Length: 171
Image (cartoon, rainbow, N blue to C red; front, side, top):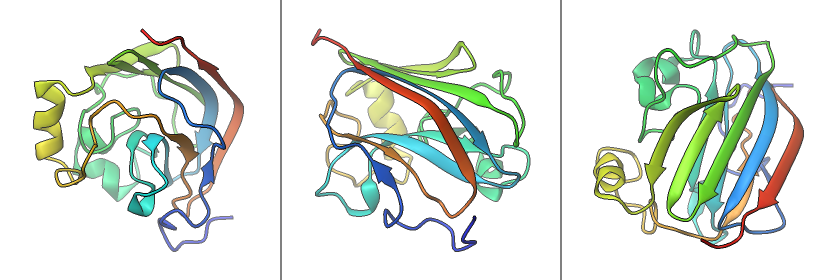
């Protein structure tokens, strides 16, 4: 049930026991109408509010945060890199498939079988996006880290299923 209180700032998130540096993460998800959530990666335990990179999952049509701009819409690297407007998104209430691949310094976000964004950790382009984001003062954000995977509780109904993670060999 949604709490209606918004982001719980980590209090009810689900976090992996293990930490990952290079991986292929796949999952299916559904967001309620007006809902907001995400899958975070490179999450360190010593950071406040479970900071990390976030694959945004949100009702693009109804949630106010998605209306701020495409860098806060579904499949974006939250607040940094926008997913394209023509991404293959199914509407709130329907099942979508997400995927995050981290191979070396290369990161990809996939939605319903289509690669929608890719970026290089530590690159000038990513650091420029960071400088314009809410993460501008976060040490380590945008760099290669070994961290937890986190399913975010943002106070809205969200469903996850068929979650698999495959560690990739160091490249």
